[in-house]
Amino acid sequence: MGVTTSDLRVPTPLEGVLEGEADFGEPTRTLYATDASIYEVKPAGVVFPAGREDVRRVVEYAREHGVSITPRGREAV
Image (tube, rainbow, N blue to C red; front, side, top):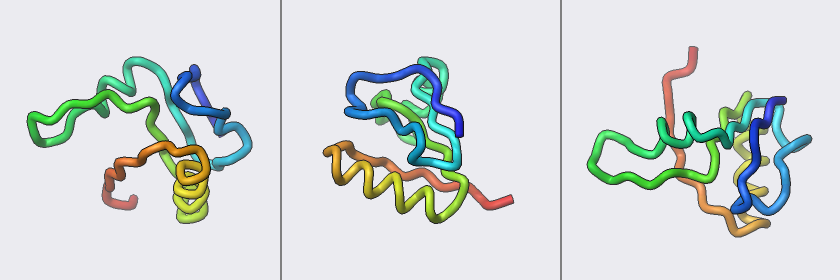
């Protein structure tokens, strides 16, 4: 698992929680700050889950720590 940088808005590290990746770096946060609309909010971080279990873990983590989630999907490859 890879976790880069840290963000004070995330109460505890995601280390050991995910099999996938989590990125709290400025470039990734900026890239994911917008969608297909004019709405723009920079996220605290971006998670790239490795599978369904990671999604479940992130949702559970967010619920326990009061962190909001904005899901984005992509076609599975």
